Every structure is written in structure tokens, then in C-alpha cells.
Length: 429
Figure 1: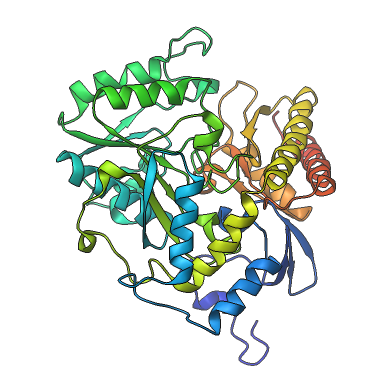
Figure 2 (figure 1 turned 90 degrees about the horizontal axis):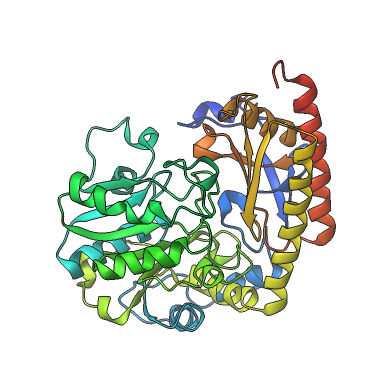
């Protein structure tokens, strides 16, 4: 209740709110109004790659406030110029141009698709099952999950959904060691029989985020790049979650050794929570008129100042090595727990982008157990999310990349404790 008015603040919100009121954050930790401590294992909304209130980012923001908070994207500023130069230097060599006129992942993805459509003169967009393009009307219409599209009558035409490389539950019931990448080759059938035949782009998260942390098998993305190149389809990597060191490489494109035609990046770009997004493209994709894609707060000067510092930090070899080390500890320790808990169906991930899949005794997906485990973790002060916006069966684990070895072990310890709690209380295992 509000201390003066007696009104519950939750009553003012259009959407549902929990009872916790956060008041402070530092690194991987947050504290609520009662002084309780939490380990933030989803990095805010998967965007705080440097954790809460990173001192270098805070200092950059304070310094920029004294000079220039905001300028239209029609003008150059030192922070935006530096961000564009850094992104060209840090992304694959074929990517030479940066569009900063978006302020979030949804609009960056839409912008990349617009560029592909403008450049090719074609319309359709290929998106994998479980692919999450975004939350705007257009992006939601392209999303792989019908749950996001279902409530709305108007969808973008030309969305073509194809099976993703979810080897653990393969659409084609194949073995990844012998399938020959059927989930790439059969896209031709979808294009022939389920599209207009006018395909502009394929947009894919190198590791799915909302869709359950699906990690493609070795060679999948290389084969996909060949497929798209042969058919003159623009390949877009949505690195809004996988970028900026999350996989232990600067970009998942580096980790998998594949150079797409475009990369979109947002979320972690400013390190500690300010909005900024970028579309990084090949030279030959330049030319779409600037008035066809732009947003008021795109290219935000203050956010760009935070991004400059963030990029300087995450590109350091020792920073990326720590991501690989801490992620490896959690992955190994959670994988070992599969021997104790048979409902722990799969543990997968790269770096600090990890997923824990829960299943019923018959092997079917278990949103029930995933929800119970996420709650048990929250009771222990570990904040996680459940895939598919809370309706899936995978625990999403994405702590800030400043995670220490000690905290990696602490997260694994609490995971074991939460699993034990779910195991003992579950009526059917």
C-alpha cells in the first residue's frame, strides 16, 4: 500500500505486477524495499550485460549529461560516431555500415527486414519455429509462435515459418550426426509450396532466446548461409540476445564462424539499461532512403555514450574468457544434476546463454515443472524466466556477464536446492 494515500500501486498499472519493489542494483545483485537480496539471472530483460549500475557506464552517462543528452539522428555526435566505428571494427569483416535509427530489438529487426525487402524487391520473410522477431504488430506477425500472433487480426503478409534446428526434439525425427542438415534443405519445399515464391530474407537468432535456448548443431548455420547465398536470400542474424559477449565471443556470428548479410543488436549494447539498437549491414545493402526507417529516440546521444564504454569493456579478451569460464561452470554442474533428477530433460547453452529443459515422466514438455522450478529459484533469491513468455518448459538463465566464479557456483548450488524442492513436492515425476 502507498504509505500516504493507502492505494496499492499495482492498481495503477495496466499490466500485472508482482509484489516485489526493487530499490537498488549492483552487478549481478538487486535488493528490494525489504532489504532482500536477489541474484539477477536474466540481466534485467536480458539487456544488462555489465550488470546493474556498472561504474564505468554510470560515469559515462553522468559525463554526457553535462554536454548533450539528445540530438536528432540527422546530426553527427561524438558518441554516435564512435559507436558506429566500433561496431564496424568488431563485427565480421563483410559488415561495413551501421544504422542507429532504432531504439529496440523489434524495430531494429523490422528495419533489417525493410532493408532486405527494399534491396531485393521481394517480400516474404523466413522465420524458424520458436523464432522471436519482436513485439510490434509487424514483428509479432513474423514471430514463429502462434501464441503471440493469435490475439490480433492483422498480421504482416509473407511470413514463412520453417522447422528450427531443435535437435533435442527434431521436427524430422532425425539424428543430428546423420541427418545431413535436413532442416536446411527442406526449406526449399516450404518456399515452393507455402510462400509466394518471393523471399527477401531469413531472420534467425543464432541461439533462440524466448523460444527455449535452442543451440544449432555444428555446421547448421554454415549450411544455412550457403542456402541463402545460393538463392539470393538476405540472411539476418538477430543478435539482440546473443550479441555483446553473451556467448563468450563478441557475437554469436564469431562463435559459429558465420558471417551473415546483416546483424541486429540491441539489449546489451548500452551495458546497463539505456535504449539503443543497431543494424549492421554489408556495403551492397546500403541505399534504402533514411525516411523509410527511423524513430524519435533512435541514435540516442546519451545511450551512445554508454555504448562506447560498454563496447570497450566487452571486447577485452579477459572479459570474454570470464564469460566462457563462468558459463562452463554452470553448464557442467547443471548437466551433472541430470543424473539425480529425471525431469531435468536437457541442459544446453553457450557462454552465459543457458537453458534448462523440463519434461514429464513420459518425455513430454513440462511447462508445469518449469514454472515450479522458476518459483522455487525465486524463493531462493535467484531470478529466472520461463521460455515462451512464461508458457514454455525451459528455464532461461542469462546472468550479467560480470558474473564471478564464486557466484557461478552459488547459482549452481541454489539450482540444486530448487530442483530438490521441486522433486520432493511434485505429485508425479
